[in-house]
Image 1 (tube, chains in turn cyan, orange):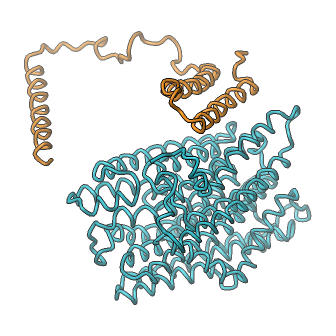
Image 2 (cartoon, each protein chain N blue to C red; image 1 turned 90 degrees about the vertical axis):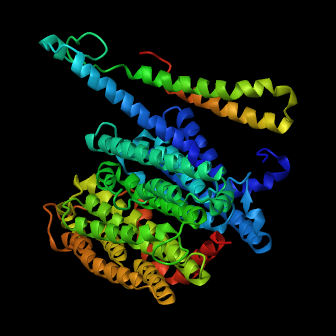
Length: 517
Length: 118
C-alpha cells in the first residue's frame, strides 16, 4: 500500500473534483484576504459558483474514465491504496453535492451570513469536498474523516450568524448532536474493525463472512447506523433538524437539508450491503439485518415528518419536517434495495437508482424552496406562513417559483417530484411482487396516504401567497440578479427536468449498477 | 477468545463486590456528624467571589488554535526529519506541499489579526 507512488498518479483522477475544490477554497480565502478593501460578496459568491462548475466539469473526464474501467477491469476501481472507489456512483452523488453547493453559493449572495465573505464560501466548498469523499469512500477511516470534514464545516456554517441567538443555538445544537452521534458511529466502526481486522470495505466484508460473532456484528451495525441516521435525519435521530434549519442561515439550511442528506444516503447505501450482508435477516432471507431495521424506520420517519409538519406556523420548520418526511420516502427505496440485495440484480438496481433519482430531484426542489423562504425572511422580516401573504402580488415570479417547488415536493404529476415518487414507489412494488412480500405494498400504501396528508401543509404556503393580502401589496421584494438566477434555475429545473427524466434515470441506473460491480 | 473475556467478567464482578463491600463497611463504621460546612459545594477549591461565569478574552482561544498548527506540524514533521535521508524526491515534494499549507494558514491567521493582542 504505497500512497505516494508517482506511477499511480492517474489514480488521483478519482478525487479530481475534490482537488479542484480544495484549491479553489484556498484561492477564495487568499483572494478575500489579499484584496485590500475586501471583495464584494457578489463577486465571491459568483466565483465560488464558478469554481464549483469547474469541479463539475472535472467530474466528466473522471467519470468517463471510471466508466471505462468498470467496463474493462473492475479491479481497477478501488484506488489510492483502497481508500477510494472510483465509480460512477460516487460521481453521480458528487454531481448532486456540487450543483447543490453552487445554487447555495448563488442564493447566499443576498444574505447577511455571507457578509463574512471568504470564510463562508470556503467552508461551503470544504463541506462539498467532505461530501464528495463520503460518497467515494471505500474505507472505514476515510468514511469517518470525510463525514467529519463535511460535518464540521456545516456546524460552523449553521452557526455563522454569531450575533443572532437562533443561529448560535442552531450551530451549538447541530454540533452537540452531531458530535455525539458521530462518536457512537466511531464506536461501532471500532467493533467492525475489531471483528474484521481491516478497514477496506471489501476485505472487511470477506472477513466478516467468516466471523461467528453475529450478535456483536448486529450490535455494531446499530451503533454505526446511528451516524447514518443522523445525517439523513431519520427518526429517531431527527430532533436536531427543525431547530437547526430554523436558526441556520437559510441558504445553509437548504444545503444541509439536501446535499448533507444525500451524503448520508450515499455512505449508507455503499457501506451497509458490503459490511453487513452476512448478518441473517428476519424478513427476506439473506438480505441482512438492516432490512429488518429499515422498514420500521421508513414508517416512523414518514409518519413523524408528515404529521409534525401540519402543525407548524414557521415555514422553515415546516420545510424541516417535510425534509424528514422526504427522507422517509427514500428509506422505502433503501429498504427495497436491502430486501433484494444479492438476489435479484434488476430489483436492486432499480431501487437504488430510484433513491439516487429521488435525491437529484429533491435537491433541486428543496434548495429552491429554502431560497424563496430566505428571500421572504430577509425582505419581509419573518419566515412564518403569514409573512408569505400577498407574495403573488408583490413578486409574482417568486410566488410562481414557490408554487412550482411546493407542488414538486408534494409530487404533483407534471413536475419532477412526481417522477421521483413514481419511480420510488414502482421499485418498491416490484420488490413486493418479486419476493411476494406484502410489507412493501403496505409501505407504499402508507406513503401515498402520507403524500395526501402533505397536500395540506405544502398548499398552505400557496394559499398564503395567493389568497391573503399584505399591507404593502404593491411593493415588490428586492432580489439581486444572481439570487434571482438561482431561484429561476431551481424552478426551471423542477419543470423542465421532466424532459430530461430519461437520461437522468439512465444516469441513476448506471450509478447504481457501478456500485454493485 | 471467549474464555479470555471470562476473566474480564470475573474481574468485573469482583470489582463490584469489593467496591460494594468497602462502601457498606464504611457506612456502618463511620461516625455521622453532618454540619453546614460539610454539606457546602466543593468544587476544587475556594468558593468564588462574585459570578463564576467570567468571560475570557477570545484571543486565548485563537492563540490555542494557532498553536494547533505548530502542533500538527511538529507531530508530522519529526518522523519525516528522522527518515529524511531515505526519502525519494516525490515524497519530499508532497511534504513541502503539506508544510506550505500549514504555513499559509499561519499567514491567514496573522493577516486576520489573530496574533495581535489588542
